[in-house]
Image 1 (tube, protein in one colour):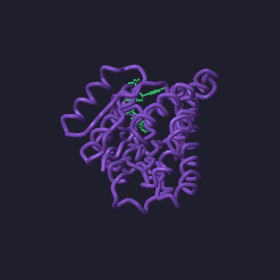
Image 2 (cartoon, protein in one colour):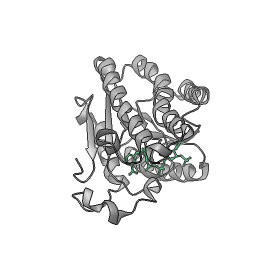
Image 3 (cartoon, rainbow, N blue to C red):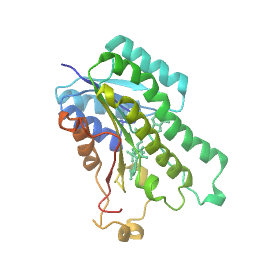
Image 4 (cartoon, rainbow, N blue to C red):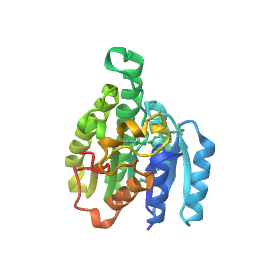
Amino acid sequence: MKRRVLVTGSSRGIGKAIALELAKSGFDIAVHFRSNREAAETVAREIEALGRSAWLLGFDVADRAGAVAAIEQDIEANGAYYGVVCNAGIHRDAAFPALTGEEWDEVVNVNLNGFFNVTQPTVMPMVRARKGGRIVVLSSVAGIMGNRGQVNYSATKAALIGATKSLAIELASRQITVNCVAPGVIETDMVDDVEMDRIKHLIPAGRMGRAEEVAGLVAYLFSDSAAYITRQVISVNGGMA
Ligand code: NDP
C-alpha cells in the first residue's frame, strides 16, 4: 500500500533529513519548499533514487489561500496523505525591547498560522480515508524552556505544543497520532550564526545535534510500532533539559 507524506520545508535542513528518512522507511514524499525549488528538486531525486515517489509542492505556509489550494489540489489528484510533518519554520531574533511588530507577526504567521494552514486541509481527508495516520510538529527547546532573544519564536513553539496536544485528543479515536518533536541546537542553516563556544556549556552532550538525529525520531513516530504514542512532546537535545 502506498502511503503519502507531506513534509513542509523539506528543501533543506531538518525537513530534508526527515523526507529522506521517511522515504527509506517506505513512504512517498511531497517535498515542500517556499523559495528554493532547485534544492527541493535535488531532494526529490534523492528520494527517487531510494525507490520511492517524490513530487514538489511550493507555497508559503503563511499564505492560507495558497497553502489550501496547493494541498487540496494534490489530495484531489492523488489521494489523502497518511501523514504530515509540520517542519517549515523561521526565527527573527532580537532582545525583546528591540523586537519589532513585523518580526513578531512574521514568526507567528509562518510558525503558528502555518501549522493551521497546512494541517487543517489535510485532516478530514485523512479521517475519511480510515487508514489512521501520523502528524508530527516541530517545536523547539525554546518552546519548553524559553530562550534569550527569542520571545516571538518561543511563543510560537510553545503554542504548537498546545495545538498538538488538543489535536491529538480529537484524532486519537481515528488512529491518527499527533506529537511534537522538540529539537535542541541542530546544525542547519538556521543556526549558522550561533557561536558554539558561547552555548556549549548548556549542552551536556557538548555538541550540536545532526538533522539525521531528529529525523530518526520522526521516522520512529511514523512506524507502526509507535501507534500508541500520541499527545507527547519528545526532545532531541543532547540533554539540555
Ligand atoms: P532551515 O532554516 O534550515 O530550513 C527551513 C525550511 O523551512 C526550508 O525548507 C524553508 O524553505 C522552509 N520555510 C521557511 N519559511 C517558510 C515559509 N514561509 N513557507 C514555506 N516554507 C518555509 O531550518 P531547520 O531545518 O533548522 O528547522 C526546521 C524546523 O525545526 C523549524 O520549524 C525550526 O524552528 C525547528 N527547529 C530547528 C532547530 C535548529 O537548531 N536547527 C532547533 C529547534 C527547532 P526554503 O528553502 O524554500 O526557504
